[in-house]
Length: 102
Length: 130
Length: 135
Image (cartoon, rainbow over all chains, first blue to last red):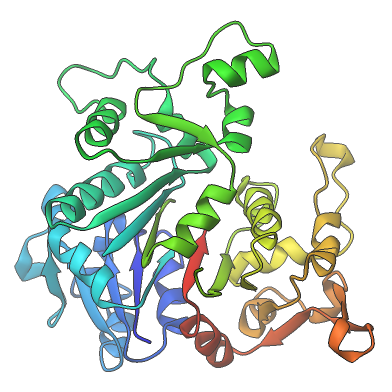
C-alpha cells in the first residue's frame, strides 16, 4: 500500500517535513506543496534530511508553488521531480492513500 | 476516480483553500468525480457570501461557488464548526435566533457525518490545512 | 454496502493553543457511529493532548480532556502514541491520562487503550490505513 505524503510547511519553520520522513514507510512518496517547497532547496539546512530519505521515498515538488516563490529549478535538490496540479492529482490517484501532514 | 477533499482553513489567511481549489479544478478537468468538498475548522469561512476581497485578486468564495455550479459539486460546511464561527444559512438562522444568514451560493451546512461518509464512499480523500 | 475502512486520525498539535485538538476529537466521536475501524495517532506536540491534570479554569476555556476518557465507550480503543515524541518532550506513559476500554471479546476485561509505539511501528500502522484525517 504505497502512500502519498504531502508537506506544506518549510523545514526551517516547522518539524512537519522531519516528522513525515521519520514516519513515512519506504516505498511511499512525498509531495512538497505551498511553503513546503522550501524543503526542496539544495544546500539548505535540512536538505540532508531530504537527501538521505530519497533512497526510500520518492520526492516531488509542486511547480506552481516554486514559481510563486521565485525558486528556480537549478536550486532544487537533485532527484526531486516537479509536478503541476495535474501531476498532484495523478499522485493522489496512483497512491492508495494520501496523508497530509498538518 | 471518486475523490473527496477536506479544507481546514479559511480563505486568504492560509493557502489551503487555494491549493484545494486548484487541485479540485484539475481533478475535474481530468474527468475525475469529486464526491464532496468538506469545510471544517476555519474552512467554514470559505462559505460566506459577504467577502469583498480586493478587485485585483481572486475572489475565492466566488471561485468555489462557480466551480460548484459548473460541476454540480457538493460543498459542505460543517454545522458545528459553522455555529462556532458564525456561518449561517436561513434554517440555522431560524433555529438559533439569528437576524440574518450569510451562506454563499453552492454551499450547504451539514453534519460531520458527511465527512466520514465522504471518506467511506470515495476512493481518495485529500486534506488541505495548516 | 461499502466495506469497513481503516480510519486513522493523526494529531500533531498541542491542545488549547489552537482548536484542532478539540475539533478533531469531535470528528472521532461522530465517526464512531459509522462502525469503521478507527485508530488515533498522537505524534510530536499531539502527545500533549493526552497529558494528565489539565485544569483550564484560569484561562476560561472548556477542559475537554475528559472526553478522551469516553473514547473507550465509543469503541475507539486503538490510541497510538509515538515513543520518540514522548521522549523528546520529557514525558513517559505515566504522564498521560490512563485511557481504558472494556474488551467485549475478553469478558469485558478493562484494558489500556493507549499503546506507546516506536516510530517504526507507527509507520506500519499509518501505512495500513485506508483514510488518514489530519487537522
